[in-house]
Image (tube, rainbow, N blue to C red):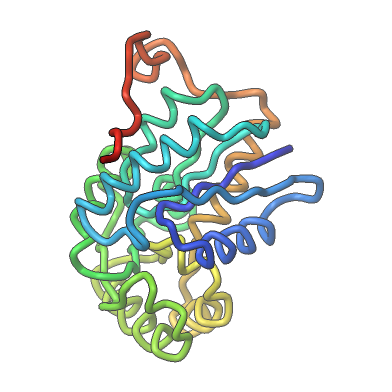
Length: 241
């Protein structure tokens, strides 16, 4: 089985970290390949970044030539999943809804711990569109930017504080609200032990769900909103100069 994991930003180091986490979750025999868009923001933190990254990821998927059996979109709360489902003929699993669906199997309400507070609206909208927003107790920011997550000590402290606020808001399960958090193994384990709450990594959840869909021979329905795009002329990039 071959899974293509798309980063939503242009930072190669983050793609490598996401792929590492995805490979750690994948079953034996599953091949995980990372895809980094050639253009777009270095980190997605806001509506403008999100829309730019969605177009860049779709462009990268359109041009990718190597075969794959499923796509995992590794951008929490980012746009593009609906377009990707129209574009490709394999299952597309977004880490946002994958994590939320699994969290709903573990507790009545879940909380999302994310990066900057400015991304909360996007995440809430994404969860609502996926049909799992009603079970979300809170989306809590750590105050850290995506690229700040490399500072393990600072991230651990901020993550624990945000997790406590999510718990106090009624969350029984925690969800990692950024693909860049997939490498926080020790931090996540410590938080889970201290708070007694399971923590769901969206990248791992999406990989396992993608494997299940492929194994069951299931893919995106073409009967309605995800029908193949209408044939027409499309300009994917503007001329320079």
